[in-house]
Length: 359
Image (cartoon, rainbow, N blue to C red; front, side):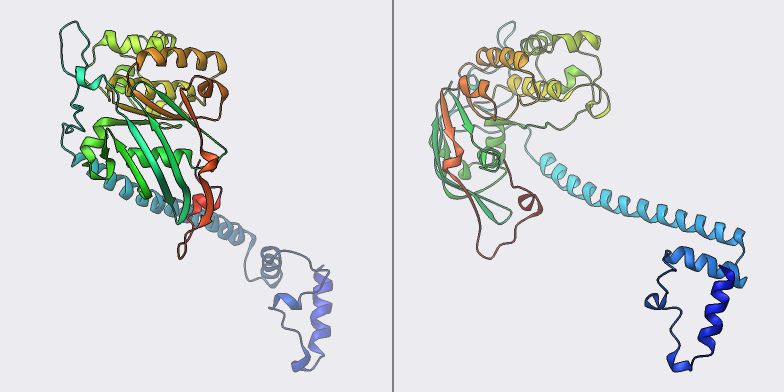
């Protein structure tokens, strides 16, 4: 190979300077020299004696360290942005008053102690009438839902069904206050939710997402986040009803720790822990966003049966892609009728809509 390179250079040296190829330009490399830039440079340095093998190895190792450091710095910058966003959300939560106000005559204060009787304030045991009237929802520059209408009365289950992207989750988030309506109204017991202060709405509405945020601590502490005054008997009773008694026993009782970010529990158990926390709050309106999607059929059937008795009198709106929740509903709303998929004029779609949109 050395002799071939020497012969090529000798032939090029006999050419006029204007006709000589630029040996440093990639397009001037001969076809039979189909090697990477790294290999060609390494061979050239070695042949010319500009760098030793040891220096080449050291250089390659140094470049690897530089690449690792650059990747680490990029990851840290991304985490910094996430931390700033989380801190902003945390500051909003910390600024909320400790006791929510009343909403349309329904007291939303924390549970009160009544001796051995039900510890939840009696006025919070009743549901609220939810009226969704011709509601439109926009998200990320896209109109997701138009003209959605239904009524959910106290004690009723209203199930939202439809294909992925039909706006089921977006409508739930609009009811809970995370998104704003672009048309129509949403009212609770005749009060437009847009007229409510955030503490009042937060006290009246509980949303259980499909993928609850992982929490750290004991089972009792995690479930009591919704009702800190709940007794051990109340917590254990709800957990048993949701088929979580085995998990409690395996971890040694309510003081058993679920591990950092819930690493010791499955997706289905995490969903049921979030559901138990919401049930102990006894909100007038409970929103369930595909909250049984990670359960097998037998467990789902048992949970739905228990949920009926645990939430008697509470208004429930849930989304699902499965048959069992739809079969248990008092009213089924097909969101496909209200779904749209056209961009709002002058807006730019966000990344999540570009990948398939909300469900």
